[in-house]
Image (cartoon, rainbow, N blue to C red; front, top):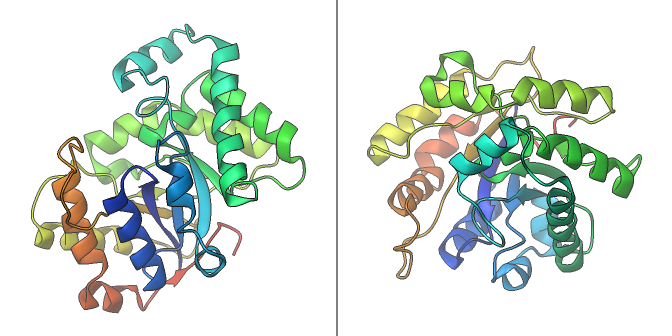
Length: 262
């Protein structure tokens, strides 16, 4: 069965970058999403060597809530739902992030998703699709659809409700390749053992008769200087589980791929 195992937030911190690169080298990840407005982005991008690029898809983690001219996620959601975002500023922000990606990596992103799934919000999704079409024409990046399974609970329901169906329908109508279900949504709580149990549950939800799903994760190694990262303890636990021999055994039944069309 095919699965895209994707680590978010590359470029946010050194602890995150080191964890992701290590997991790609260990063949535990097949994609990572980059935050190109991070002050350390150019330094982070140097870690994406040709050998890393061969092993994993490298995507843009579209960001409106963390770096740059960020606003809070709740405010962004309310403004987008009420169509109060300034379209020109949205487009400028998207172009700026794509420019930074291309400048550092040397190519267009393999795919696009969003930090806190902002890429699927009203106004942002329309601007994103328009820009990607104008910049890349027939060589379009694939798109990660933030659509957790219905049975994944309230967090998954909220993520779906913020525009996943509309985004997917609009994208497919314009010729974009889209991923299937988004696995990996949880509240960043619990022990390492509980995270492993969650991973096993998510892996059981992968089916060969459906579009290739993405299992997202947020790993980081343990090191000093990450107090401002609210989910950092969960990141460290995720890394420990993802790097473990126990997970390697669980993944033997899966083919980790770089895009939904592999």
